[in-house]
Each structure stands twice: as structure tokens, then as C-alpha cells.
Image (tube, rainbow, N blue to C red; front, side, top):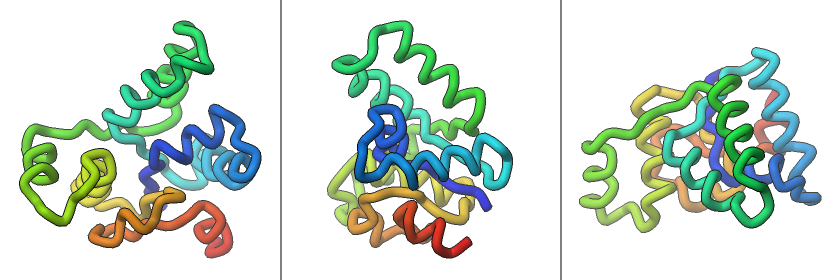
Length: 136
């Protein structure tokens, strides 16, 4: 399956968030070892680089970007994606709207996120890691 990995799932792994690390890490493993194909949006990379500045030094943050670019397919957003989200009243959050656009543009199977309530307008189903793993 082809999976868009939301920023919060990546943060679960990188920040070793106790409540969510195991299931999020399992999603990573499946993507890294080719069981599923993992995608990340380009804006997630810049968001992560910024968010991790408090917990990771510069070289560690660069290594995160290199790792993600090595093992995941990076989806770039276009001007039209930003405009579609900004001009549509159903999108209240730019980041979530862009994740939806990326998943739809690439016709992915799922968006893996813990924030499923904000993806109710997505054609691509959003699913929590635990529920996705239970489906396998």
C-alpha cells in the first residue's frame, strides 16, 4: 500500500513519544523495509526541521531530513495546491489541507495520522497507526 505519513507520526518516532512510539515506529519499519511505500510531503520536512530545533542540534536535524529523503518518497506541493487549500472554506488548517492535497494528487491509499478528525474532507482515508496495523 501507498501511505502518506503525517508529520505527527514522524514526530512520534523522532521524539520517542511513549504513548505512540511503538505503533508509529512499526509504520516506519514497514515503509523502510518495503512492505508498504511511504510518502512524506515536502512541507513536512521543513516543519520537522523547525519543530526539532529545541530537541535536536543542526546536524541531527539535517540527518533526519537525509533519512526521510532516503527511505520515503517526498511529495512536492505546487502553487495550485496552496491556492486550493487557501481558497476553500472547508480547510481550516493549511498543513492538514496540504497533506490531503498531496495524498489525493498521488492517489495514495491512506494518510497515516493521529489527527483523523481534521481529515474528514479527504478522499484518501485518514487512519490512525493502530487501526491501520489492525487491518493488516
